[in-house]
Image 1 (tube, rainbow, N blue to C red):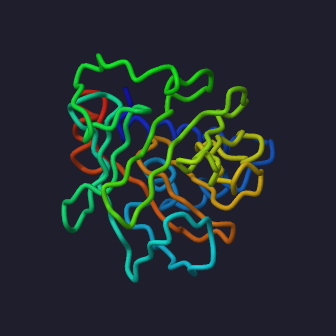
Image 2: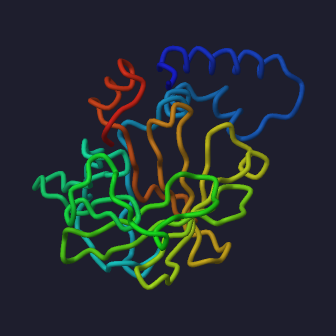
Length: 242
């Protein structure tokens, strides 16, 4: 169960008091916590109104080649049919754009709410630290299908995002706290199978928001739990959408 915002901010206040009395050198993040009250809120629960910077079409990692002239919003919502079934809706139209599902089980192609259907050995995933092995099927002709598979042996739970033909588009992994010099969770997004970092994902302490930054430090995108999900988390211990 996730901590409530009050408890999280209380713990951060204790950390700041300890830092003020400490004689050891502070990281840049600690110094900002001690000197910037606004950063304390961002550190705890994320930036509520991020200023996203428009990106050049030639920059970043290219996949489907779909671009927009203004900020685009999507809603990711867990379906009721199975625990692996997650739908991604267009915020403006309400249409399903993509659906994430267990490998080989497209809920739009078959109805199996109890997960009784055997998809075959070819869809079974062995190893990996994260339980995020899934297929993502497009319901929008502009988008492409892809799949997520874990690296079998990895210190930081590296995940590969691959095209249907197994060509690796990018990989995502956790970053160590010694590397980031931060108490907040960090992830790196690298090109293909390399260690060439293209984006850095920074979560707040409650993991309510995940801010995606490019190598220039620009905020490119943000994933955030909705107000409904926050209420569900407070009441039931988990939310169903973001």
